[in-house]
Length: 173
Image 1 (spheres, rainbow, N blue to C red):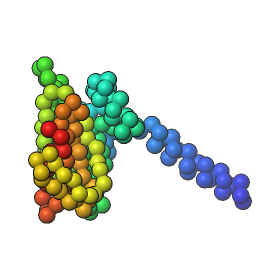
Image 2: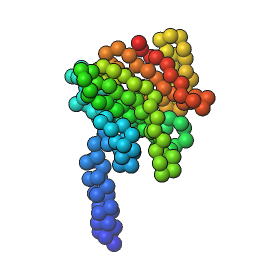
Image 3: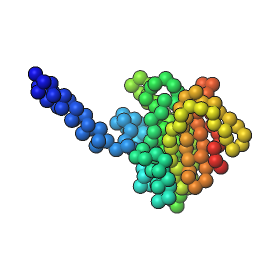
Image 4: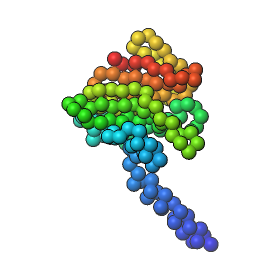
């Protein structure tokens, strides 16, 4: 009986572990990926290979094996699957990157652009709720996780869901 239970447990666990290990940190859920490809053709989620050597090293130091262009975040505090995506495209001499917020509503994804950036490719990550002070003396008291959109070379912007709207402050300019 114990051998049977152990064997059954291994058959259930091994495929899950194998499936989890093959998934790239920059892969969104398949249905979200289809929406992004349709709504923003020619873009792709920022990956480590898109970053210059210094930015890549800094991101890995601060965020280990996370994806620099995709973060799951409970932005609205409702527990629904929500992702912040940095979508980039190489057009002309300078890349263009969009910060997109995607939240699952029922079977569909609500997708909105929060910001845009030209030039060196920025990254995105999430921080815990708390009080954040901007460079222009503005403050945000976030009761939910926040999103940070950062161009390591010069700027960082924080987004929080407060008073039923997106609030934005510059952390670095």
